[in-house]
Image (cartoon, rainbow, N blue to C red; front, side, top):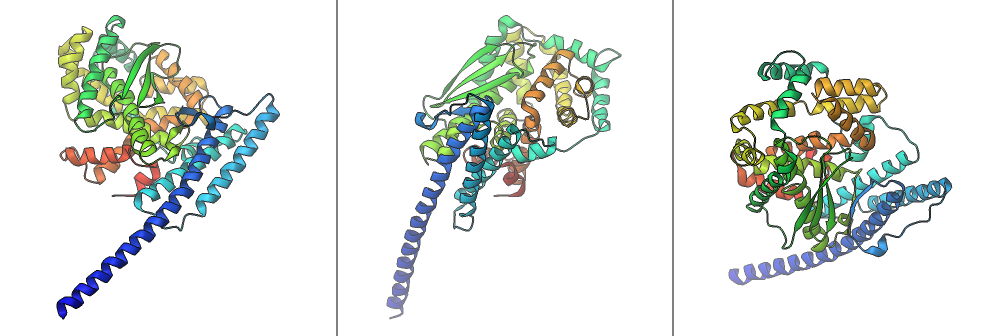
Length: 448
């Protein structure tokens, strides 16, 4: 009798759980349908806003008929389109608000947060296109869901003092660094061979930890007259075009940096996995469009920069450069160790560029003052400082996505147990970020 009663209650529990799961599945399907509708309209909205800013839509590989163009012949047409897009953004945000109390699993919650933050960034983009003005920090918070810390010149001077001790020669440190770096320029006729070797190694190391869809690939092009050093143009169907700017000399350490950042496990891998896991498998169409001025960019740039350390932990990068890339470029391998020491200190100066952007865009510094700062505290040559300022003028607060983005990704991985001495956990967390809807503030404020 006891056995029968236990079995009866067990059967009831199983049936109840089955009904509950069925109801949950029905609810989840309804929520998914509502989210899919918002996602489709979000994509169409981003494409419309992109008609008013040629740099805004970085990639799109969704349905061709979603990319309908409005006829914009006058400023009045543009103004009217902005008003329409602003109203559409408000409507989509309201639709999302109506879902905030609905039950959702963790992945659905992340999707909800992603869409909400992306739409807030669209609203900000429209505000700026309408002539609205924000401070550097306000803009970065609204567009990229993060604010970079501010450092004074004393912070950077301490790093400069360390560099001053190890750089050859005496006198102006920026000029000495420029002279020193000339020993590590990749000759133009060897550039392609060096990059191919770096890409091959980055891909091999990435595939040891991440499975990529069959047929993924990219093409490398060498270009000039650009404000950036390299760019990944994702075309969909797991294919990218990576352009490398040869306006200025390319140093040997940049071979791996660019191969990893733009390719493996950086932008190409990130976009490929999003297309495979979220677009093709889950039908989440919001990932068919990539608005450049959005929180997604901080995740993209942060994972691309942190990805370099994922595939080359510890001393593995300098060892590969010294044994493979230096000889391919015809450079003196005996100088590799010292060069790595200098580059590590230069990396600590990366936030100096944010200060130049913040003060220049907030109209506290004029162009000359910003260039002087970049030359003194970022140790850029005059030509490189000019290129960086052109980037700042065009992409504004986007600059925070590289250094702050890497810091946010690293901190999230570390605090969840993915430290260097736990490589498997480290890769699991990195892959999780690459294949799920994430926002900068979400990574900062949450743990697994």
